[in-house]
Amino acid sequence: MKAREHTLSMIRWWKDAGVSRADLAVRRCDGAMLWHRDVLLDDLPLPWARAENTRHGEVFIRPARGYPWPLVFLDDVAEEIAVRIARKYDAVVVKTSEEGGCHVWLSCSCSLDEWSRHQAQRWLAPRAGADIASTSGEHLGRLAGFKNWKREGAWVNVIQASHRRRRWVPRTNEEVPLPGVEPMPESTDNPSSHPADTSPSGVEWGWVCGMLEAGLPPRHAYYRLVERARRRRGRDAERYARKTVGKALARARPIGLGM
Image (cartoon, rainbow, N blue to C red):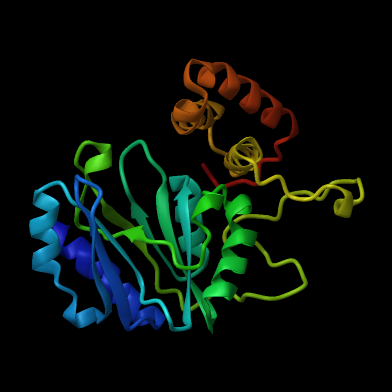
């Protein structure tokens, strides 16, 4: 597909999922954020966004704030896991770069307000190995068909846009099956005595375990963790990644992705 077709594919999928309005944003090189808020999908100023993108502006989108939408967002999901989600549920998977993870927009069986989307994303993120920092309920994702200048101008492309008429069902006060993968094994300890670790290391631990349990090669998990932790840990990133992946391998339970 050409770049424009990737953009239209993503927008068409959003329409089918029940989204009618969006916030479109561009972050310029100087950090300035330019917004077109609460715009009908058919009226998005895409020529303007393309012009900004050619000047190295980063192009982002989200369902318009202030409305309930039947959609949740997962950021930085390993491609193999993202594709598996889309094989089981209605989802659009957007690959943001060759070495980076994917954005997943997951269709839900009911509309969720911003707080409910936040809760759903917080539950799903560690189980899908997604970035827990991107679970605000109103987080921006990249719009397909534009260049990712953070990744040296890599194209942002739709790699799956499934229409299986099977939507994820959010529930409360009970375990919800993870889209596309099996639930992580429960600890034999009292779970209430082990609250979720939301520190950077705790989030990365869950992220690595999720990749290994999904059947990704340990080498893949290692290099992705090095890249993710480099800014925070500097020269210690490689030792930290080796140790984390080694510990995760000792407790990983492959779930059979058919790889």
